Image (cartoon, rainbow, N blue to C red; front, top):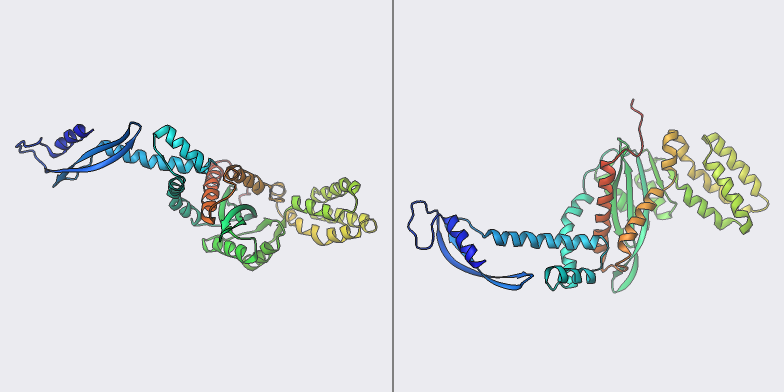
Length: 355
């Protein structure tokens, strides 16, 4: 390699060592020591230097590119859910290098600039917005905390889905949801016609503060789950579930209201707490009836976000515990970028009628 670098320098200068030539473009300027790790072990190299002409050996440029590629590969392995200990073992086996867990963690930071740019990209008109959260264990202040990963999916005017936001916070308190929703607005989100989410109190308060007046669709799947808490007898659960399905599957809002009234009357005496809960809560899951029929089934629940949460969990379960909020945000963002790009380049999720 040393000899090859000397020959390459001579070609770049237009003259060999001590050679007089009218085509000379610069002069040799000694050597600089450099240690390179390789599969053969450590190589102690003498890198040729020049004056009056810019030169760097292509062999080392290839080595530097390989090093950057290795860092990106390590980061990608981490994104795919491979633990840092396993990544270190892989790099030792493949590259003959001793890579520490701290080096692997630092290598993942290569993704940070790209992911930060993606998280802060400008947004536009977003007719439908779906919100949800999931929890991961994070070390915070010397203890282990369950941190919330706040997620937002938007349906764009061309009918395609896009992950429009992700954030990590210590809880789903109103202040965190409000900061998250405010950041979406600050990035240019407008024209929201419907918000779909669960009934978490912090999210409800933040939604009213940031999107006051925008219709809200409470997730029908969560409503059915919540209803079971008010069923006094296990034997009644199948009947209650069937009655709720009759409400949600009604052809229009008028019929849905009629089915709800029937259900409330049915349980007024046998399960008064359930009847009261249904009267107060089930209407929150009927806003979707104001949408075109073709849109209702896809927007009456947060199930698409639940599937996205499962994909994140598939990648994060190897880590089990994140060292800080930044590492959790990095991994969640990388997973979401992949999914969002697939959605944005795929077929439309919803078809809007052209006027």
